[in-house]
Image (cartoon, rainbow, N blue to C red):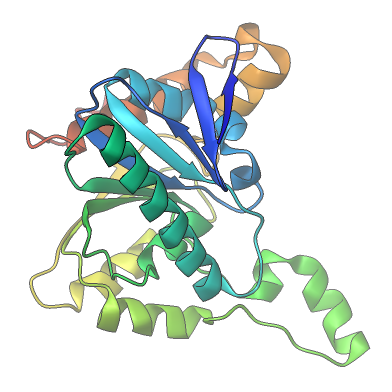
Length: 258
């Protein structure tokens, strides 16, 4: 285990590939998988989001990774890492409620491909779900692939991913958050896929912001300090934090947008 302390005195501990914050008596647990490259150092790129949720007395487990082509293997690895951390937390604080799973961008897909189909969670919150093919996600492939005589695609492919979700993902409770200025978002495709299942209770919610709303404040704050905050972006992040915190309780109601 590795323990570190960032500038605001929040203690982070690293267990294998997962960055954790453990309040003394957490009322719940958030298991986060971030988006491509942002998730390499989630304790930095998602810092303000995750630390704010920890101040709501939620334990935080955020799996760190670099994106690869085998998304199913990464989904399995994330699930195993998060399970180990959950067991360690349970040993430390006693019984805790089932986790809320939280995904951003590619992280949504990895949660949806978890080998337990979402069974062992209280529900899933997706932020800016997208499921693009490799040549859209990695533009260089589209340019050099044909010249070198090879084609590369993610595994599972976008179409197969949606088929697997509709057949194998069994968690009925999902909050699908999209941002009103996000050109990468494919949340509506995910919503249609989930609604194909029996007893689905997935809800879609649009909030102000863009694709980097969950992460950009943490990056700015860590690199150039508090003065770098953009007031409107900070308000967007605050609304997102409040929405996640409320949904983690049993008293959720949609936020009032101003």
